[in-house]
Length: 392
Image 1 (cartoon, rainbow, N blue to C red):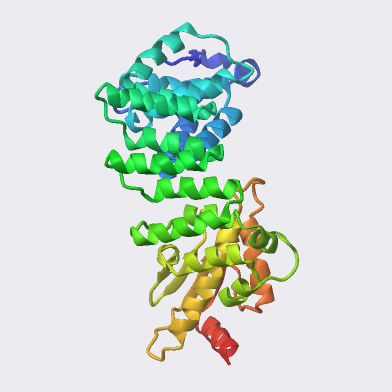
Image 2 (image 1 turned 90 degrees about the vertical axis):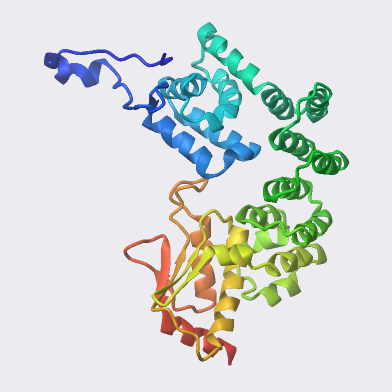
């Protein structure tokens, strides 16, 4: 049953009055599993949750849910929830977000108590069991109660999943209870779950939110020791917490244009964090594609601080490679920074503004692509000559 969607068959003679009489029914996408058909908006919402791995990231999931409910009319929001509650849900991996989605919908001004909706929600909560209880308690700022639920699971012979343990860990971290957060790391290991990139980013984000920069350095070192790869979110979590770096990228003045210059002007805590990040090239390697035709650096997903540091690392990497005579110079060099579709102010890209300022200060030959204003481009040989001259 589609909750909140009314489909009417209107005689063709009424068509010229239709736009004035009724709001058009949102187009639906048929569900192959036989579940509730989805609106296109709901389908995009689920796709965004999946593509950003938001199911495993509480903060990202809640941000996307809040944005979806705030920007969607009643029928579309309820359609998404109805689909998740359907026994033939074609997105079973997203079932865990049904309760937080319902919670956010219930806060909307247009929402009225719907016993059918709640009745459909209860069996799902029973199926999810403990997962929804743990996440909800953490969301309410009660990670200690959430941990008690996990303990009850263990006592009842139910092995907690990585999902529940991450929720509790991050719940403590968001409230600044670092000892409890670190204790949860040990509990995860006891339960057989090694710390991964997602958990590490939650920990780094928690430290950063309370300006505990000295605690972030040992954790980055631990990630390296355990061969836990850094991600773009790792860079974002760390660099968003560095006030000096953020003052550079948000200001209108000049800024250091090499990693060594940057480290020299930072205070000890921020300098150590930058050193730990740049010693691992995994994020740069993933963002960069280099072949005979094109050298491309993709800054999508990076906040301003991350884009700034990656640019500095990228320039040093190009200098290092271009020093070698045998190096094949790509025909074109491209920096992709986007047009601001996902920025807080749509159409205004802080990353693009930053990269443009860097290009100007360094007197780079790269210019905005007329065909794609979200990119900077230049001929490979021209960029090579510019970089080689800067070495002299």
